[in-house]
Length: 267
Image 1 (cartoon, one colour):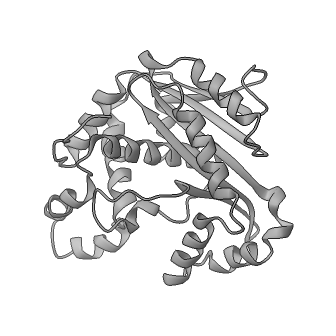
Image 2: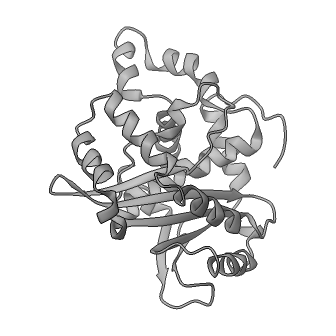
């Protein structure tokens, strides 16, 4: 996203905190949401659902505006919790890329058959690549709330643990299959990680991205994460707490920009 998130958000690592044995990052708005970010986030939301690289070939014969108009109805979920959850995942993935140097090899939402299909399992897999080899694998879970909810983050922690407890987490097989289908240049490195995973567990880490409406945030959210993290052991866990003013209104505005169908229910 062309490093433009840094014009809006600023993450800071908290050196010491009472909320558990994990790295805590507090991300705050250092400026009001910049208008120049609107088209870039809208593009990121669309790209998370459809491959804009592929559709650019169609745009040579058919204008982008007409093409996006045709596709927008299939991009935006009509259920409000899904709309907000989808936005949260897109934003967290972009933060991982811009602020933390990760790459998201597979956009999971592109594989939803219907716009309101809920995709189970870990939200995303983020990776770092060094000298042609995968140096780090990050299992990512996102929770977004615009109303008071003190347990959602703890539920996200449980979800990470549940998926990771499998001999082969579903998200790993999902990403491996998608890379193989498109003969991705990353496939050999990912295959090597997959085949040698027992020797690479120290390269695996976990990221819980919390996107919260500023006015409903309470530190009790992190208190509940601590209570769960005492029993749900995940090594190398990072929790990123992001508070955004008027979050619900911001999401609604962005969806209108991509031709959102009005939502049919609330959180």
